[in-house]
Amino acid sequence: MKEKSEYLNKFHESIFAKMSALAKSTGAVNLGQGFPDFEGPSFVSKYLIEGVQAGHNQYAPSPGYLPLRSALSEIYKNRYQLEYCPETEISITTGATEGIFSTITALVNPGDEVVIFEPFYDSYVASVEMRGGIPKFVSLGGSEFNFDEGELKNAFSGKTKLVILNTPHNPTGKVFSDTELGLIRDLVIKYDSYVISDEVYEYLTFDDHEHTPVSKIDGLKERTIVISSAGKTFGYTGWKVGWCLAPRDISAAIRLTRQYITFSVNTPAQYAFSKCLTEIDNYLPEFQKLYDGKRLMVMKALDDLGWRYFRPRGTYFIMASLEGVSDLGDVDFCMDLIKKAGVVFIPPSVFYRKSNEGKRWVRICFAKSDQTLKSAIDKLSLY
Figure 1 (cartoon, rainbow, N blue to C red):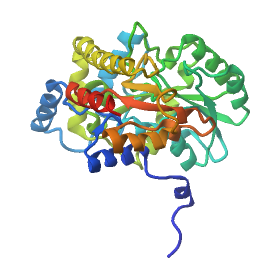
Figure 2 (cartoon, rainbow, N blue to C red):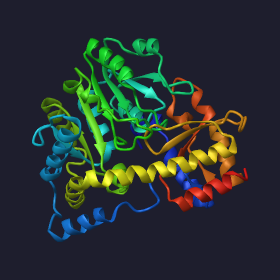
Figure 3 (cartoon, rainbow, N blue to C red):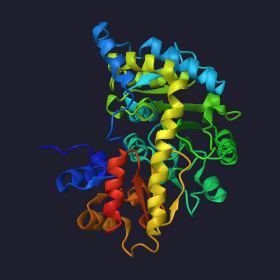
């Protein structure tokens, strides 16, 4: 038989799927893949049932259920003073990942260069390479995961079509500063490029750090596609409801690609989240308190064990250093940890293409029940 697509030669099983499968097969405590192992707020499922019973069960319009787009428009206006027209500038996607893929499909031609910060969420590179784009990597390094300004400048060229940002940043927990965003802005404008800003952890920031939407940076709104989702905020990651916010002409291009990828997102979930967003101001303080408590629990355990780590300013991940813990690289360490302690972390070197720094870190997900976290901490203390 004839060969499959040559693009498949670049891709392998996701590290998230691999580590979760190992957790299941070995019975290890899974602090790997980034999803809660406890239910989100009860009002979310209540609204889903309400939507089903009210008959919201057929195809939604391809751009998305209008009340959900309208609710998002109000939130971005009220919280960030950003104006997005729900009719023409907000599109609902099957999670943020599909929004990323659809946007890259709409913007990137074979041979276009795309600047990506590493460590990266793995779908960024896969989506770019599926389109024949050329990733250009900028490393977030050192104990604070900062980038080198010279390296950033060297990553740009006349072929740069797009920059992909993620803030708050997975896997490091970094929140890009206004100064860093300003440096990126200057280069984006100089080279007439676009920005994809993945902001799925926008409501999970800690220690007085605040999220700044990239489209709020002076000069970037007309160039930026903001991508976020309801899954991380409300703890229902399996419902896969995300959105893209972009200027009208870019939105039209994204919508055109989506017609032939997923067409539309499941209707009752869109109905449910349109209702949930009306309660977000009351919900967020408890949500942030919940996750901050889990963050502090894991950080205390790491302190007690003598592990060094980057104190996360956002997301629900902690990057812990292997320095002084093990001479093994991250992959071998994670496999050894499963075998000897029954705990699963993510080895982050798979999120790097340019730097070897990932081999000396592990990523820990604290979006787990207190019982799960305590079990993992007890096991880790015996390693």
